Amino acid sequence: MEDKIFIVGQLVSKTCAKCGSEQSHAITTLTKKGLISKVTCMVCSTVSAFKSGIAAAKDDGKVKTSTPYDRTRTYRKGQTMMHSSFGYGEVLSVIEPQKIDVKFTDGMRRLIHARNEA
Ligand SMILES: [Zn+2]
Image (tube, rainbow, N blue to C red; front, top):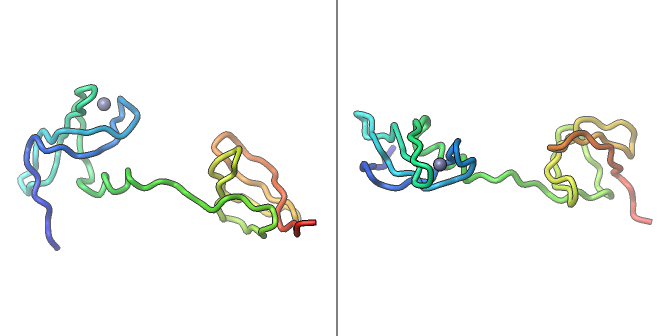
């Protein structure tokens, strides 16, 4: 396994808790092993711990995506969807053969599914 070499002052991308969004952070301190331990936000100057090293940066880049909601599709519990109005949702349960309860960020909604287009 090859370790990346970091230097103090180098910029890394990280989600800033104070800014609430991803910002450029300057590496402030490094551990003995040469891993990032503390970073300073370039926007608000907040110094924060860079807990999981570079893995955190990778996670931050991950965007929750799913396939668009399609009422002709048959959903199962645990499946996810991207609804045009409600956003990202997860199927909580199948209530009836053609009805599902879906948990969206703003609450639960009952949607239809498995409808063959008439
Ligand atoms: Zn910030």
